[in-house]
Amino acid sequence: MRRLSASLAAAGLLAGAVLSAAPAAYAAEEPVLTLDGPAEVGLRPYPATGEPQGATIDVTVDNPGEDGRNGGFEGEYTVTFDLSGLAGVADVRFGETGSAHCTITGTTGVCTDAFGIPAGVSSVAELDVTAAKGSALGATGAIEVTGTAEGATFTSFSTSVTVGGPDLVMHPLGLKRDVTPGQVQDAPLTFTNTGTAAADGVRLTLTTSHGLDYTRRYANCDYTETTGLTTAVCGFPGTFEPGATYTLAEPIRLKATGHAYIEIFTHRVEEQSGPRRKAAKGAGPELTLKKAPATPRAADLEPADNHQEVDLRATNTADFAAYGDQLTAMAGETVEATVGFRNSGPAWIAYLRSGEPVATVDVTVPAGATVTEKPARCEPRTAKGEYREEPLGAPRYFCDTPIRVFEDEDFALPFELKIDKVVPDAKGAVTVRNTFLSHPEPAFDPKAANNTAQLVLNPKDPSTDPTGGSTTTGSSTSGPTTTTGPTTTTGGTTTGGTTTGGTTTTGTTGTTGGSTPTTQTGGGLANTGSLALPATAGAAALLAAGAATFVVARRRANAS
Image 1 (cartoon, rainbow, N blue to C red):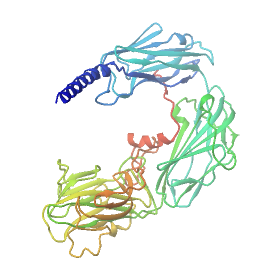
Image 2 (image 1 turned 90 degrees about the vertical axis):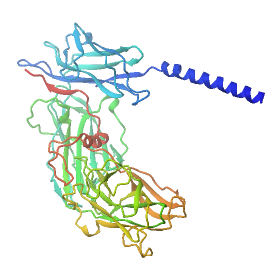
Image 3 (image 1 turned 45 degrees about the vertical axis):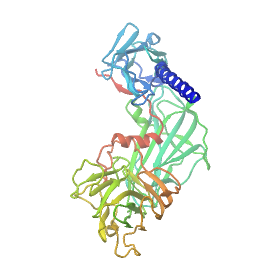
């Protein structure tokens, strides 16, 4: 007993030491805040008449902390801009956006904020930069940015500013927007250097959505495939002169595949000098550029001109076939019902532009049962489909799909049901439909007859399965249930295998959710396939992830 008492006392002392040391160790950790922005910025030379055109530099800070503990930095901080390196090169002032706490005195800019820095990347200030009057073409200088704060450490940042430079402007393509599966179109990519200096090598970045493919691949292009996207990065060494226009020696050939529906093709050009050079890994012949006759274009240093996009729509359909489940259980038991739909194709369906769900699975719960667990993407509703706050125990659930559903994909939704009362042959419904209740028929699916299935509890004849789902007899969370099914997508995660006695053997895993593409002048795609809806922030993410990184400096003309 004495030994036990001594051991407990020692353990208590040790625990007290650990508890008292932990806050001190945590308090000693200072966040490291990273200042960032574009590495280099080119300016239009000072004009003989009129106001100079400039660039806007967005200086950001990255706080790697997460919400809650180790979250945002709450103290006061100061960011200093050393502008002395731009003397005779450029004039600088703080922009109108995000710079309310900033001033410039002489060649020093200072931004002070007492409200801290949230977790993630946020803007510190915008700098409007124009070429200085009398500055020489090719003149260059640098802006040095540093930060200080009590209780935090800043990493510094520097950006180079040059008067003049290349400005690569990608020309739009005249592709047919309405296509048929199997149709091939030529894409003669063309760009012009509208800048004042030659580009030292260029890089083309091409991105196709899942329903488009290249009929030929090239040795100087690096092809990367991600979920629903293929990105080709093609390098071209050489000197690309100012005022000259260049086009591919042979056009890229784009094919609408058999599963094409609503597709996007993006093409971007940028200089490939210095660290941007990347060895190509493709196979096949070399893709080359040739000089083309110049076409008149207005002087424009907008980085957005480097990038063009084309939306295509294939004459195609998909078949979303709903399936339900059959379960037999006693009162008080809890069972798992898996319902959903399978896309029998031939088309994949993706609303990359709008970022909206492709469809909704509408699940009505059979009588005598209560939902005790549901997929995260399923929202509770009343029997009439109206809003309901309580997540569990609802008589009906609306489950939205991700923004894309691939051909041959199985979208499975597992529900846990408690049997409150045995109701023989109690039937619920599983319907895959449009996201709008007022227009339930999906425009892409002409086979409406298989869009609804049944969820049956205690069926009169459990040996047959008219619902398209599995039949489970005597199932409970602790019982001898055996359910075998195909590879499926469950709440955005692909799983496959056999569940026996509550144990699941999981197959391959993947994702079906995601974000979507960049902005396009022609508008966005609604869930009806319309090209009239503008791109959303969610839609901007997908192609941005597959395409080359845009220059942070947003170029624009200063107000006169």
